[in-house]
Image (tube, rainbow, N blue to C red):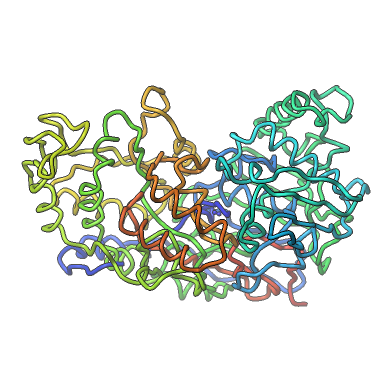
Length: 615
């Protein structure tokens, strides 16, 4: 739902994914990408990654800046920019998943030992390691209990919440000691799924500093009652919404992660200093870590070429023609395929366009207008891979099925036209087809689509991103050839992602029709899809509803059979809850003298406490 982590859309939380292309259709894209390397800049005399440096500057994603610090994250703020690249530097989850590109528990970054399952996988025992808050207090089971009580009190606000799953599937929990916690579950679970997808949601929070209901109120045990927990939650959320005070509010200075916030401005410039009480792995070489915002790929490219102070960042696809010069400026390129899927999100509850999206044949027509091979070759400069369903095929992993390698809906606008004509549409080759045979029969437009309805919708996507521009413009052109009008607009990432909210047709907030925010990163989670495509899921932003999909997803959560995951992904690949787009690699750039940078973890955490410059 990383939506960077799990859930995480890009910042690095969203990304980009193939089909048979046509040379003529690629001409415009080819011309556009050829212009991308024209930006100037000199590599002479820069000191990027100079030996002996003790501070690191990290380039944020273009237009993607952190805007949420509280570990219980609402859907509109659930991005990698807020999790792995900001919050995770200060507050570490109970379990970290992913190491060296492998889908395993990262014991060195987890705050607890591997959980023990018993009683037919209905009892789970968790033992905490010895960690300390920055004010010297130990991290205990009371801090886990505090998180759980606040989560239960306001669970529907949590981006990862799906009714019937965590915390609903926990019958009770008890603190056996300051370091041991026991969960009793409502029924048997798949242990890997429960550890990777459920227990990893827990982030211990400093009860001794945060359990209060107002700024001048006393810290107490307010969370021990349901009403008290709601009051504490409401207060902490009010403080989290005050983004400008992040660096000065004493609440956020009590951390158990390796970094403490020093400065934060709303434009996105962030500075951290080490937490001297951090108990996890650290080489204690860096004295500071900063994050630098960029409003466009051109600005980032110019900074890289001129020695603008970025030590870790990424190569915008638009800057690929300047790759050699940028590497010559002092960087090494490290392409990463993140564990993510890329797609265009529909709003199935939009009162105008929802009835259109609810017709599978229309979704099939739209998918047939997606030229994935062309997107990969031209918009992504070859640094991409096909994405035909809900489970990523890259990096190599044990989860995807054979059918995920095959495209159920190859690029074919003529086929899209045939689909529409066979369902009661008079097709215009330049877009704007009209429903001339309304009704619910096999050869009619479908439920909720009136006589004379136009086949058109609005699609907003992230600004400042050249690959997104190229893909969306090409999609608009090819959709028009299929008889479908796509009205494009752009906005900053936080605006587009913030608009992706579940709604009912009667709500004013249901005005959005389709969005492209670069998909979803699963992080280290098992890609069972419960957070994205279950009807009641908190991150099912488009309100997709399919009882069979719900049933198939449920089967992946409670059993140990790998076939359940195969059945689920094969069904969703056919049903198209979203429009699948190719996945793109993150072209990570690292200063040549900077060592220890491991960005290959599927959960995309930043670990600058383990980095150092050669001397």
